[in-house]
Image (cartoon, rainbow, N blue to C red; front, side):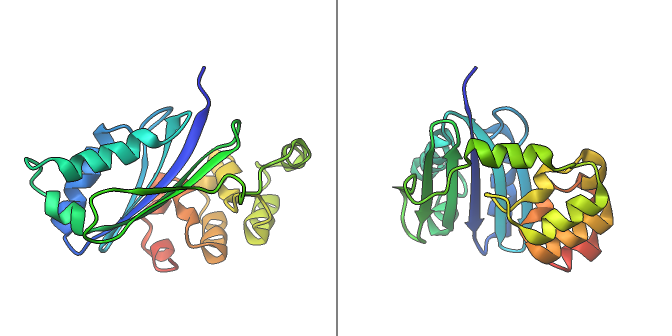
Length: 195
């Protein structure tokens, strides 16, 4: 079985029709290895959390291919967009940051493997000791953000990912965490107002 790489990409554009089209293409593209992509859309920004086999290179190539495709109705909107993202594969201890400025048609990849703090076996043991089904423990964890990736809500039980109090505590600590909340709470107006 291949190792799974985690990826994140943010695409900024003033063309909402383009972002909506790209959202549907991402649902059908190389962003779904090991499960569906976690897509969040705000005004002028499309954010996607996803996985890939060994790396997320397929996602970056997918976007570059769209920029090179003269038949793609939103080719210019994609070229005019700004893209930022990252990927990491814990087992191989490889990480990259990606970016594209408006007007560019290629995504820049920068190796940040040496800059990243990798999880040691000792850290994994500490995480296993946390009871991710205990509401008070999870609230304390999301507030402390001491985990290596800062997204304690990701480790919480499904029941707690659907608990509004837990998700609100996570959002107040880190506005990027609703991506791990239940689908219903990701769209909750009170939670979205905190972002």
